[in-house]
Image (cartoon, rainbow, N blue to C red; front, side, top):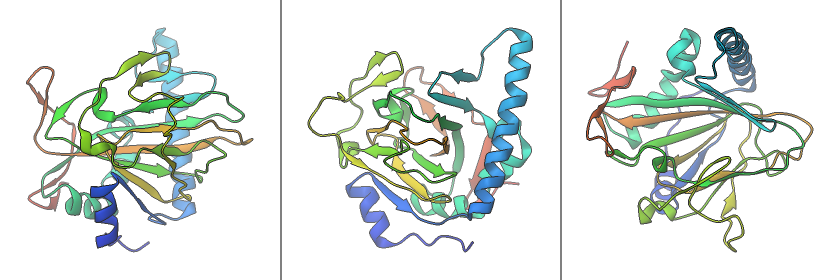
Length: 246
């Protein structure tokens, strides 16, 4: 695929609405290969932590599975996060010095009943400079039926909202509020891009297949925790002075 060119319209959408879509950044074959790599890592990781009797790095429920730090532990996935497509997007939106801040797969099981609640990514770990960039990559097509992401347009302009705990995670906007935002459908290989201060949730998977997404978050470097005042040492530097880091 060609390196994506970010249009003025996409920049305006990101600045005004807090989100935009980059369609068809990768091919379906590339997404199928990445999904297999992620699933292979998940299985290997599950077996390793089960052997130790622990659960570190893996959170599993009957309806949704999170596996984090994939790039830090799998060289092929790390290489994917360094692709020139991400270098181009991040260089345009974040500047010349960029780190991979967080990455995780989110697989939503079929015929579920629970949404993942409204939250801002900054709500979990407030940082500066903020916001950082979330690239919500669809591996096999994300629709309203199978539980794609929804966003509250313009919510990023109000900064960090108060969050309260719930059984599934932090919540900053009620599920029974009349404004439930907009559902963002993304074809396989496409990206929903939004800021870490943009309120978002994911819906119920009412389909009969697994909805597969890979969440890749990039930040300006250096980054500091607002809770501790200490620097956050990210293990994977993407660019320095606009040049990809080997």
